[in-house]
Image (cartoon, helix red, strand yellow):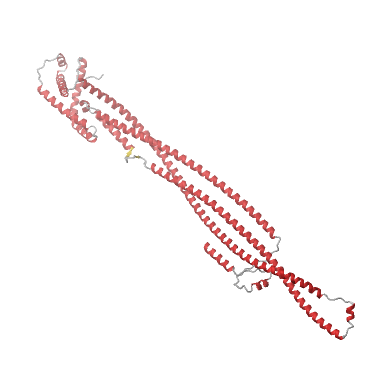
Length: 558
């Protein structure tokens, strides 16, 4: 139970001890009077500095003024003709001088307090309850001091942990920067590869156009050769029709040319007359001339036969060349189809690569946005959604200053004497507690979030690595498939060309054909053909158009 300070002790020993204590207090009052001005200045500064205690100080000042008035009125209206008590007599024997002074002071205090209680209509029970509340507040203040010390230690530990986390965060930032540089380098390499693929596509397109132009040119050449072949075939049929007729005539002439053998009738002719001799000579001359003429005709027939044989050989060669040209055209068509297939494959691959690059670009943008969100937190500051900047070091120093000021005010004797209500102090302490707890909770949330973000970043990096490995494996498998297809096609083409070489072995070796541009002279084409015999092949005048087309294609390719 708390002692009532306004109830006097009746035990003499205890009372004397209290009087000695009061004597020491009287000596200290003079020193306190000198410090009243300083305390008033201190109270004014604290009130101006902290608006929470301003109302309490105003109330205490009013109470002090009222008490001074009551004390003065009681002192004036006091009658000194009072019967002495036995206790007072005993005290006078012990220390009469001190007794008078202390007794008067105690009476003054009692009168003042009773008058104030009468004015305020307060009872002793209310007063005791207030004192009890003051004691409880003092206990609460002590507990709060312990809690503040504990919180200071907690803040120091958290600051050390924050420093360590800053170092981890710096290392994480370096790792992120390296990862971003690698991503940028990969993106640049992908762009370079895409440019190369585009260039290769353009080259393939140009090559396809060249092959198509060559196919058209070979088709024109084929049509020309077909026309020439038709002409020669008609000429051959005509010669075959003539050939049989000439052979029958030549066989009859050969029978007539054979000299008659010597017979008895011819021997008899030797003994003919001179007239018969002249007639025989004339006949012999005619026969000789006829034989010469027939010999010339036979020679011309042999020449014609040789020419026909040469024409047949030339036709066979032209047919073989036509077949070779058709095979080349088919080969070019196959190559064009193969190139088209390669183009489609490369287009699909490039589309897949572009999709992968788009995904990487989107992930890169998301990662940059996350980094921008994390960059809102500085080294020593936390940026709230409301835009407030809180410095942890400054807040901790401010809290320590407030608690030091409160502890000084608790030690102030004026506050102890006046018995100020400590509700406002409770409110301030509770507010400070809430601020510290909110800061600690926010700090823990931030640390947990940063840890979760770090784990998420590691998971994302591992997923990206797995996806990249899978894409690399798929690309390697596709490359292997393409290489196997090419090898099979090369084997097929090698077998095809080997068969063509075996076909050509059955034919005699041909001479190199020299092609020259010839002007349009359709009248002398047959004469030129007979002059060149079978060593040169007849070249039509449409070669000029082919040359002009080849020049145009070269200009387009450039």
